[in-house]
View (cartoon, rainbow, N blue to C red):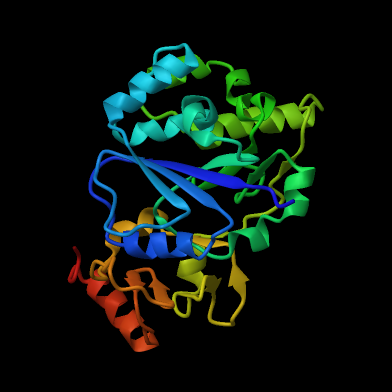
Length: 283
């Protein structure tokens, strides 16, 4: 029987301009579910595997305080520190999924279950898209108290979640703890993180042309398939226009300058780079 996977995200404020493409890449993965908590109305599109729940940042702090039994006070971006605790915070929404985890919205998904196979899920309790580190944009945990509650074993977790400032608890802090536990043989389950399997800004800088999403797959210029693309810090320089929820596409070009629902030539990529370099065309 196939293992079920639930990815959770919290988003406060207007949805990003590429949100229609993000949701379309979710829809192309019917064997994965998403649960998105937001203070905005759900977008004007209904997907069977994407569920929206209304929640404000104040509401998140209150719910986390109740569920964790410790004061939580996060502001703005620092609320990502709560990601490793999503299993406890959102326990009433998770149901009987075999694995649950956290993700970001600044991504386009490829074929997730091609890279996250049932074989891997049988053998490992935690899977991350980063090498020897948990990833804020994709890490999943087996839905058991021992695994999804491993954040409680990180020294000082209560203080980090009680402070408004960002501690990178979802990445560096919990990763350091897990690596130390692995080194001394004290972790009672295994982790799968042997290599980076996400396309991030370094890959886009090395190969600026040819990345695209087609029929649910992330492909590079050579036609090689990848797990997903993370926009990271380069999303702030996007010059592509907002996408339309009502217009679905089987193809999106992905460049350092945005997401386009059509092929983008090398010349267009170079011109966008030049405009950005000279401070033009920024939004």
